[in-house]
Length: 500
Image: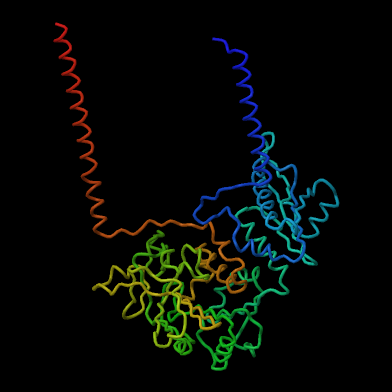
């Protein structure tokens, strides 16, 4: 059947109309991009803190994106994502944010400009014409605000770009960087990674026993790490800083553990001062049989990995979700930790927040200190199990005191082992250095989803279902199949009889 002329004309009009609608929608989408972010933590939506930072700009900001035009195929999607993100960033304050895209390979002047500010070519191994060659590309940014400049030499990950841009803006819009004092007492050689975390965020001020008039320094926060021997004069300086509303952050404990798992009691130098604030670190180690990290132990010629109940993991459900210091964190590892006890009468006028706690399958070790991985198997009686605090924050007026019951959690070896603790430490420093300006950006997209712990009754039920349920299903399926085949044969027999 042939289409009539009116029918063909009608179909052509419909086609042209749909084409016009498609082109119009495409133009509108380019002008006013709309994106639906369905991720749990809104990973692909600019943070509220980013919007506040850009809206507070009092002068023009220029972002220069130095990128090669002849990128390898595998890098083109990255460049497109960076380009899309920067345009979205610019849209927050179009009147004050200018974006320039420059190709260093296009002119000698642009290349020299990029290299003079520290944006150097990145070398990539690529396959061209069936040969592996080294290709140099540029993929960096420079931000200019008033008479200041911040450089991102290599932008290789889009998920870190928002945080890096915000931090660069904060550094340029503030008259000076925040100052964070750091005092390390016992085992200073174990904390060499700490300056690498603090330096990009703040000016680190080393504090020692010989430091004088600490309370007169204009610190934005003071970190006290493993304080085991302090003079009364030094303690008074700490107290004076605290009364001047300088946040005090303490990582300390009452147990010393060596690399060969030799454990002994040690003196926590701020016990009396903490008691005046209403807190007490237990002398006993905390043991958690439900939430802990795997650890490797030498067994003859073999390295054996097993759950180690003295390396306790505080998971998302055990962290204070609404507190800025732990908001957005997924987990924190507390190796060889004590517990924190609180005196309600002393704390009656203070706001107390338990930042991190163990599972409800935790208990305090009794008797001699023993960190043997087989400790649980050697118990002769059931201990008292309950959840216990491992990190606490106290606030009173403008005073802030934060205590972590393990000095080991930020040692180099555990920061190398636990990416979660690196994120936690960075989040902690930026919270005290910059307040809410960077809150929630770094921690997005770090989701871990551990399997929930099952009770013994539930385990037995599942075991019974799997043991008996599968054979039952197979038998039932066979019975149904046999019944169907029997009915089919009976039907065929009836048809044959009917024909006769």
